[in-house]
Structures are given as structure tokens and as C-alpha cells.
Image (cartoon, rainbow, N blue to C red; front, side, top):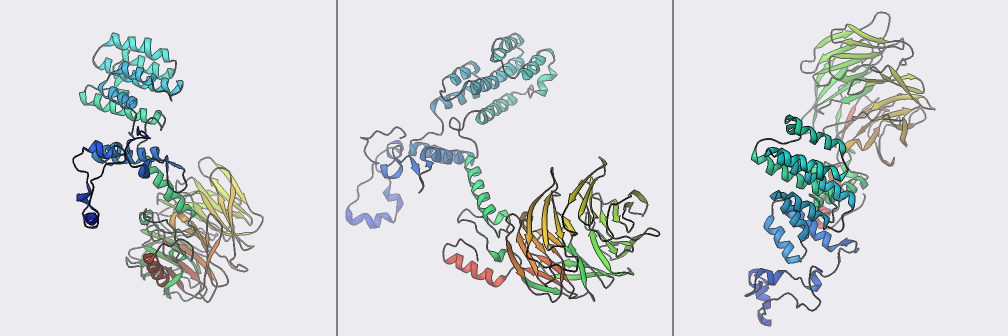
Length: 580
């Protein structure tokens, strides 16, 4: 392989007396070949080093391809000397002499020679040859126009490009260049000499994408393969909950359970009655909670992970059913049970406005994405929208929502989502005036919208949670079981890395965590002494989860540092790959 004959001698090495071998091995500079050229010493590898056609334990990686990809990576990283040295030492050139000739001809603008060289590359089919010839002749045509050789350019178009019988729409565009010089600018030709050099470089890049990989090794192929390997490892990791920046090439990636928040790191006890709802802000810097005690509380998440009380928001005359963060986290809405909505300034804790409607109670609240309006479900089953000053902008009448209902608006502001019947969720397209329905067989108690607006997590009365895809055809993607729900509204959420986990409250006082893709129940976290009504995963901190309970407390969950330290120590002592 690589031009080495069977009768070639092995790589020449300086002979060392037996007694000196140990001392010389300590100094690699003394083991270099003596009185021989680089080409003599490195062009032909030892049979034991490289004559095998494959590398790797499974024998599926072709040695020549492997070396070419490494060589390509070295050149891409700017290590030209190392790339050239690898070509010489391995005896495997990155490109064949024909391809190197073609590339040089493109750089030199020898277009007719380029087309002729293409014909000599045996592995190319007719379609590829024609497409590559078109790119080359198009460049020839444009450069002739640039030099104001209109007759020659017209001849190239008529007698060379047209005869290829492909890409007729582009042929018409080129013909327009002759009539209108401004069309050349649109096609990327200008009066600067440097643009010709750049455009020829662009032709080479296009040829690399067009020609088979066996002919021209693709740019960044090694990086692509490594990224693929990391993606496979990450996707196969049931407990994956770390940032991509934490992935390493030095060992196979495998997260353990200790990467999921499972340890109570703080208990918040400012509410005086059952805590019904809580939600982290979009930035993860704040947490808001609402309670049967008729108050809402804004908590601040410090950089060290501690959660501290910022404001207690009072003024509601009924239990506070839910809260909703404004798009920029500067304002917060709170909704009393069949009462009013209050809008609060997060910095000062001041109530900025009260939204109410005569004779009708408000039962849910939310923001439009631009922050200029709010919406609410009403006790008369309608959905209303107001501007910030309380002026009603729009109202959708009819069976749009239930008396106790979650609501959401997609980030583009086009779709309003609400529970319109006991077993049905309404997806209302405001612009198209079009409605779609998610229909369950069991009563729906709550739902939450994923951050990417592609999925809806639906809690059912039969102690199941369904994950619905709401892009394209509506369909159930996964089901989650194990938590307990008999009497109360229990809320769930998506969270962790790329929202790969499902967390839920439960009436048995535990927090449950599932793997979103597999549906596997991963953890049941004890700690509360009453039903867990709601959970929220910090969008900025993969390792922070909050839960709200009838026991009047909020628990902040973080990593189990003790087990994390033990695992770190065991990893440092040897290879580890598996679950724990």
C-alpha cells in the first residue's frame, strides 16, 4: 500500500550497541536516523506499523481513509508542515496527482485544461462531470466578461456551456450578463482583481462538495465524525444533564444519577398556607410562588445558588392560583381564584395594575411574547386579551376554557392554548382563525408548554402524563406513570439539558423524575410532608429544581454532592462507564 513493494527493506534505523539501548531510549533525539534524508527515513512505514489495510480493533476503518481524514484535519487547523509530513511518512497522499493538477489548474484559471482533467478521473459519473464542468466554464465565462472579452464569453456560453444541456435557468442568467453588466454583480463578479482569486477559491470549495469524498476529502470530516460520536454517546446517556462544554474526548461519556437534582439543598418557608404554584423566571434569576394564603412571593436566585426572599406580594382577596413571568422578567402577573389579575414590578414589588371584568372572574393569566399585552381565561369560559393599561383588545367567546384552566401562548404569539373541555385542549390560531383540538380519553387537570413550543405536557386524572407533539399532526409521543393523583391539581414540567427530563409533583409527597425519551422513571424524591402541587426546573441551571407543597414549603433540589464526590474520586482511579 502507498507504493511500497513487498521486497522493500524496513525503515532504516541507527544501530545501537546492546548496552547503550537503555540509556539512549531516554533521549528521543538520539534515536533519529543517521545520514539519511527525511524521504528515505519516513516514506515507507514498517509492515507492523502500517501495512494493514484497516486500523482499529474491529477492522472496519480503512487505513487510507483514516490517514487522509487526519491529514485533511491537520491542513484545516493550519498545520501545513505536519500535514505534508504525514502524507510523506504514510505514503498516502491526501489527493491523487490528477486531483492536485485539477486544483492547481483552477487556481491558475486554465479552464479548458480543467475540463479535460475532469474527464480523466475515472470514478466520476457523467452527471458529476457535467455539473463540475458547468461550474468551471461558468467561471471562465464570467472572467472573460470581466476582461471585456465579450465575443469570447459568448462563444464559451454557446459552444461549451449550452452543450452540457444542464441548468438552463442558470444559462439564461449568464446570457443576461452580456446584455446587462449589472447582472454580473448579482452573480458575484466585480472589478477588483482580488475578487477573481476569491471566486476561484469559491469554485474549489464548490467542487469539493460536488465531487465524491473518495476524490476530494471533505473539509472538517474528522470534526464531523467526532461530533457524531459525542452526539451518539450523549443521546444514549439516560441521565445526561451536563452542558456540551463538559463533554470530553478523553473518555466515553456517561452521566450518572448524581447529575439530576435529587438532594434538598434549601427549604423556603415564607408562605403561611399551601403553596399551589411556582415558576422560575426566563433567566433563572428569580423564582415566583403563589399560595392559598392569598399571597405571591418573588424569590431571588443568587450566583452561589442560594434562593432568598425578595418581595411578598399582597393584595389579593382570594388564594392566588398562579403566577406568570413577563418576557423580560421585569414584571410578574398573579391571578386570584375567580378574582383579579395583578401586575407587579419585580424590582420594587409595587403593584402596577389590577385587571378585572365586571360580573366575571379571572381564572388564569399569561403574557403575549412582546410584553405589550396579557390574556386571561374567564369564568364565563371566554378568553380575553388586554393591553397593559387594562383596555380590552380582543375576546374569544364560547367554550374556550374551563373554570379552572391552564393557558399558554406560543412564542410567536400566534397560538393560544387552553383546556376548553374536561378532556380537550384547544389550540387557537389567532391569525388564521383556525382551531385544532387535542382530545384525551381521561379528564385533563393541567398542562405545560415546552420551551421550543413543539410539545405539550398533559396531566390526566388517571395518574398519567402524556407528551403531545403539536407541530404538524397532533400525536402522543410518550407516556409517564408512577406518581399519585387522586384529588388535587398536580402540575409537571420539562427541564434539564434540552428539556430531556419530565418532573412532576405527586400526592404522595414526592417529586418524580422521568427520562423524556424513554419514559423510564428515574427518581422519586422524598422530603415534603404534604402533596407536591407543582414543580419548576431552572432554565439557566440544569441542576436546580423547585417543588411546591401543601406542607407550606418550597424545596430547592440540587445535586447529591456526596455521591458526586465519590464518583469523581472513582473516576480518577480508573475507567468508569455505567449507571449508579
